[in-house]
Image 1 (tube, rainbow, N blue to C red):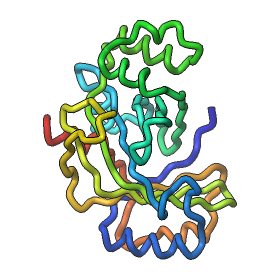
Image 2 (image 1 turned 60 degrees about the vertical axis):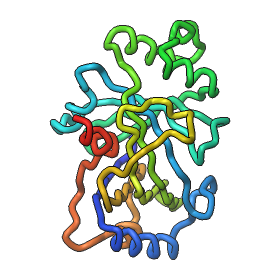
Image 3 (image 1 turned 45 degrees about the horizontal axis):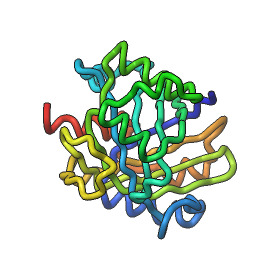
Length: 224
Protein backbone atom coordinates (compact mmCIF):
# COMPACT_ATOMS: atom_id res chain seq x y z
CA UNK A 1 0.00 0.00 0.00
CA UNK A 2 1.75 3.13 -1.26
CA UNK A 3 0.60 6.62 -0.31
CA UNK A 4 1.05 9.44 -2.81
CA UNK A 5 1.11 13.19 -2.38
CA UNK A 6 -2.16 14.81 -3.39
CA UNK A 7 -3.11 18.44 -3.97
CA UNK A 8 -6.57 19.58 -4.94
CA UNK A 9 -7.68 22.97 -6.26
CA UNK A 10 -11.15 24.30 -7.02
CA UNK A 11 -10.73 26.37 -10.18
CA UNK A 12 -12.82 28.23 -12.72
CA UNK A 13 -13.63 27.00 -16.20
CA UNK A 14 -11.28 29.59 -17.72
CA UNK A 15 -8.47 28.41 -15.42
CA UNK A 16 -9.21 24.83 -16.42
CA UNK A 17 -8.84 25.70 -20.10
CA UNK A 18 -5.49 27.38 -19.39
CA UNK A 19 -4.18 24.41 -17.41
CA UNK A 20 -5.37 22.04 -20.13
CA UNK A 21 -3.33 23.91 -22.75
CA UNK A 22 -0.22 23.89 -20.58
CA UNK A 23 -0.50 20.20 -19.79
CA UNK A 24 -1.01 19.29 -23.43
CA UNK A 25 2.33 20.95 -24.17
CA UNK A 26 4.38 19.06 -21.56
CA UNK A 27 2.53 15.87 -20.61
CA UNK A 28 0.75 12.94 -22.20
CA UNK A 29 -2.93 12.15 -22.06
CA UNK A 30 -3.84 9.05 -20.11
CA UNK A 31 -3.78 6.16 -22.65
CA UNK A 32 -7.17 4.97 -21.39
CA UNK A 33 -8.81 8.31 -22.18
CA UNK A 34 -11.02 8.64 -25.26
CA UNK A 35 -10.31 11.87 -27.13
CA UNK A 36 -8.42 13.05 -24.07
CA UNK A 37 -11.19 12.47 -21.55
CA UNK A 38 -13.47 9.92 -20.00
CA UNK A 39 -16.72 9.87 -18.11
CA UNK A 40 -16.62 8.57 -14.56
CA UNK A 41 -19.58 7.17 -12.69
CA UNK A 42 -19.14 6.38 -9.00
CA UNK A 43 -21.45 5.06 -6.32
CA UNK A 44 -20.38 6.23 -2.87
CA UNK A 45 -21.08 4.43 0.40
CA UNK A 46 -21.81 5.93 3.80
CA UNK A 47 -23.34 5.01 7.13
CA UNK A 48 -26.90 5.95 8.16
CA UNK A 49 -25.29 8.69 10.28
CA UNK A 50 -23.34 10.00 7.24
CA UNK A 51 -19.97 9.39 8.87
CA UNK A 52 -17.93 9.81 5.68
CA UNK A 53 -19.75 13.04 4.85
CA UNK A 54 -19.31 14.51 8.32
CA UNK A 55 -15.65 13.51 8.57
CA UNK A 56 -14.94 15.25 5.29
CA UNK A 57 -16.85 18.40 6.26
CA UNK A 58 -15.12 18.43 9.65
CA UNK A 59 -11.67 18.27 8.08
CA UNK A 60 -10.61 15.04 9.77
CA UNK A 61 -7.21 14.30 8.25
CA UNK A 62 -7.23 10.49 8.55
CA UNK A 63 -10.26 8.91 6.96
CA UNK A 64 -11.42 6.48 4.31
CA UNK A 65 -14.34 5.99 1.96
CA UNK A 66 -15.68 3.23 -0.26
CA UNK A 67 -17.05 3.54 -3.77
CA UNK A 68 -17.81 1.46 -6.85
CA UNK A 69 -16.72 2.98 -10.14
CA UNK A 70 -16.71 2.44 -13.89
CA UNK A 71 -15.71 4.50 -16.90
CA UNK A 72 -17.44 5.57 -20.11
CA UNK A 73 -20.50 3.49 -19.18
CA UNK A 74 -18.45 0.33 -19.82
CA UNK A 75 -19.85 -2.16 -17.31
CA UNK A 76 -17.31 -4.82 -18.26
CA UNK A 77 -14.73 -3.07 -16.04
CA UNK A 78 -16.10 -2.17 -12.60
CA UNK A 79 -13.90 -1.51 -9.58
CA UNK A 80 -14.61 -1.49 -5.88
CA UNK A 81 -12.31 1.13 -4.39
CA UNK A 82 -11.25 2.13 -0.91
CA UNK A 83 -9.71 5.60 -0.79
CA UNK A 84 -7.57 6.41 2.25
CA UNK A 85 -6.44 9.91 3.26
CA UNK A 86 -3.73 10.85 5.74
CA UNK A 87 -3.19 14.58 5.66
CA UNK A 88 -1.85 15.49 2.23
CA UNK A 89 -1.26 11.85 1.30
CA UNK A 90 -3.67 9.49 -0.41
CA UNK A 91 -3.85 5.84 -1.32
CA UNK A 92 -6.34 3.77 -3.29
CA UNK A 93 -6.98 0.03 -2.99
CA UNK A 94 -9.06 -1.63 -5.72
CA UNK A 95 -10.83 -4.90 -6.41
CA UNK A 96 -12.48 -5.97 -9.64
CA UNK A 97 -16.24 -6.62 -9.67
CA UNK A 98 -18.40 -7.98 -12.43
CA UNK A 99 -21.75 -6.36 -13.19
CA UNK A 100 -23.69 -9.08 -11.36
CA UNK A 101 -21.63 -8.65 -8.19
CA UNK A 102 -21.99 -4.86 -8.33
CA UNK A 103 -25.75 -5.13 -8.76
CA UNK A 104 -26.01 -7.53 -5.81
CA UNK A 105 -24.14 -5.09 -3.57
CA UNK A 106 -26.42 -2.24 -4.65
CA UNK A 107 -29.49 -4.37 -3.94
CA UNK A 108 -28.25 -5.49 -0.51
CA UNK A 109 -27.55 -9.09 -1.54
CA UNK A 110 -24.19 -9.30 0.24
CA UNK A 111 -24.00 -12.81 1.78
CA UNK A 112 -21.69 -14.00 -1.02
CA UNK A 113 -19.10 -11.38 -0.11
CA UNK A 114 -17.97 -13.08 3.10
CA UNK A 115 -16.53 -16.00 1.13
CA UNK A 116 -14.84 -13.87 -1.52
CA UNK A 117 -11.16 -14.48 -2.22
CA UNK A 118 -10.61 -10.72 -2.22
CA UNK A 119 -9.77 -9.04 1.09
CA UNK A 120 -11.27 -5.69 0.09
CA UNK A 121 -14.63 -7.25 -0.78
CA UNK A 122 -14.64 -9.03 2.58
CA UNK A 123 -13.77 -5.75 4.33
CA UNK A 124 -16.70 -3.99 2.68
CA UNK A 125 -18.97 -6.85 3.74
CA UNK A 126 -17.76 -6.47 7.33
CA UNK A 127 -18.48 -2.74 7.32
CA UNK A 128 -21.88 -3.24 5.72
CA UNK A 129 -22.71 -5.51 8.65
CA UNK A 130 -20.99 -3.73 11.55
CA UNK A 131 -21.38 -0.07 10.50
CA UNK A 132 -24.43 -0.51 8.23
CA UNK A 133 -22.45 0.99 5.35
CA UNK A 134 -24.75 1.35 2.34
CA UNK A 135 -24.75 2.86 -1.17
CA UNK A 136 -25.61 6.53 -0.80
CA UNK A 137 -25.53 8.43 -4.06
CA UNK A 138 -24.28 8.41 -7.64
CA UNK A 139 -21.60 10.92 -8.66
CA UNK A 140 -20.95 11.53 -12.38
CA UNK A 141 -18.31 13.78 -13.91
CA UNK A 142 -15.98 14.27 -16.86
CA UNK A 143 -12.23 13.86 -16.34
CA UNK A 144 -9.31 14.97 -18.48
CA UNK A 145 -6.20 13.12 -17.22
CA UNK A 146 -2.52 13.86 -17.92
CA UNK A 147 0.55 11.87 -16.95
CA UNK A 148 4.19 12.94 -16.60
CA UNK A 149 6.91 10.32 -16.11
CA UNK A 150 9.40 11.98 -13.71
CA UNK A 151 7.88 11.87 -10.24
CA UNK A 152 5.08 9.61 -11.53
CA UNK A 153 2.86 12.68 -11.77
CA UNK A 154 -0.83 12.60 -12.62
CA UNK A 155 -2.83 15.79 -13.19
CA UNK A 156 -6.58 15.51 -13.63
CA UNK A 157 -9.18 18.11 -14.55
CA UNK A 158 -12.71 17.22 -13.43
CA UNK A 159 -15.87 19.09 -14.37
CA UNK A 160 -19.55 18.67 -15.29
CA UNK A 161 -20.21 17.18 -11.86
CA UNK A 162 -23.66 15.65 -11.55
CA UNK A 163 -25.48 13.98 -8.67
CA UNK A 164 -27.92 11.12 -8.58
CA UNK A 165 -29.35 12.51 -5.32
CA UNK A 166 -30.73 9.42 -3.51
CA UNK A 167 -30.53 7.19 -6.58
CA UNK A 168 -28.16 4.22 -6.27
CA UNK A 169 -28.88 2.18 -9.42
CA UNK A 170 -25.61 3.28 -10.97
CA UNK A 171 -25.56 0.44 -13.52
CA UNK A 172 -28.55 2.01 -15.23
CA UNK A 173 -26.91 4.32 -17.77
CA UNK A 174 -30.28 6.05 -18.21
CA UNK A 175 -30.35 6.95 -14.52
CA UNK A 176 -31.23 10.63 -14.23
CA UNK A 177 -28.60 12.88 -12.67
CA UNK A 178 -28.70 16.63 -12.11
CA UNK A 179 -25.92 19.25 -12.04
CA UNK A 180 -24.10 19.79 -8.75
CA UNK A 181 -21.67 22.58 -7.89
CA UNK A 182 -22.46 24.62 -11.01
CA UNK A 183 -19.42 25.76 -12.98
CA UNK A 184 -16.91 24.19 -10.59
CA UNK A 185 -13.80 22.50 -11.95
CA UNK A 186 -11.42 20.47 -9.82
CA UNK A 187 -7.73 20.12 -10.54
CA UNK A 188 -5.93 17.30 -8.73
CA UNK A 189 -2.18 16.82 -8.76
CA UNK A 190 -0.69 13.53 -7.52
CA UNK A 191 2.92 12.42 -7.36
CA UNK A 192 5.28 10.04 -5.57
CA UNK A 193 8.54 11.38 -4.13
CA UNK A 194 8.87 14.74 -5.84
CA UNK A 195 6.92 17.16 -8.02
CA UNK A 196 9.00 18.44 -10.97
CA UNK A 197 9.32 22.21 -11.33
CA UNK A 198 7.87 22.08 -14.84
CA UNK A 199 4.63 20.69 -13.40
CA UNK A 200 4.65 23.16 -10.51
CA UNK A 201 4.86 25.99 -13.01
CA UNK A 202 2.21 24.51 -15.30
CA UNK A 203 -0.42 24.13 -12.57
CA UNK A 204 0.32 27.39 -10.77
CA UNK A 205 -2.55 29.87 -10.83
CA UNK A 206 -2.77 33.33 -9.23
CA UNK A 207 -4.96 33.60 -6.13
CA UNK A 208 -5.58 29.85 -6.01
CA UNK A 209 -4.96 27.87 -2.84
CA UNK A 210 -4.94 24.18 -2.11
CA UNK A 211 -8.43 23.13 -1.08
CA UNK A 212 -10.40 20.11 0.02
CA UNK A 213 -13.31 20.10 -2.42
CA UNK A 214 -15.19 16.81 -2.34
CA UNK A 215 -17.38 15.71 -5.24
CA UNK A 216 -19.20 13.39 -2.85
CA UNK A 217 -20.01 16.24 -0.47
CA UNK A 218 -21.07 18.49 -3.37
CA UNK A 219 -23.44 15.77 -4.58
CA UNK A 220 -24.89 15.19 -1.12
CA UNK A 221 -25.43 18.79 0.02
CA UNK A 222 -28.48 19.38 -2.23
CA UNK A 223 -30.38 16.67 -0.35
CA UNK A 224 -29.32 17.32 3.24
